Amino acid sequence: MQVETFEIEGLKRITPDVFGDERGWFYESFNQDKFLAMGIDVSFAQNNHSCSVKNTLRGLHFQTSPGQAKLVRCTLGRVWDVSVDLRPQSPTFGKWQATELDDQKRQMFFIPVGFAHGFCVLSDVAEFQYSCSTVYNGATEAGIAWDDPELAVAWPVSAPLLSKRDLGNQSFAEFRAKGM
Image (cartoon, rainbow, N blue to C red):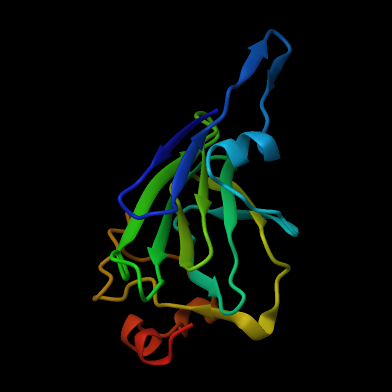
């Protein structure tokens, strides 16, 4: 496995070693020892799998205390994946990082606790899988508007398909006033 870091501390893109032959291919999507060696010390409590059509945008979601780390990957199609730093003491607070994930490169994106996360679908359909460090709890679920002008995320879609929940997400200014 190869790991790439970003300007925003904690975010990592992981490229697995893929082994293939005439029968198909195989790769490890998680190996605790290898992840520890990359500086990712996390235990996963829940796995999620979604399927979405082109131009669907999900996010920007986060869990308040205790927060939630995620390891995400696209197993069918292509997505634009975005993480926003919500850690108030971080020098990159309010900054975002995006990466394209697809079923060809098979890269994964690790997002530590303290980030909002979202993605939009670039292909006709996409299957997206994510492992989470805590079990989902609706009482700690929160979101920030995908199109918040202060964050100015460069989404590659102008009129996304959104859930009712995501249509009602707070602004980044409202989040700053309340905090995690």
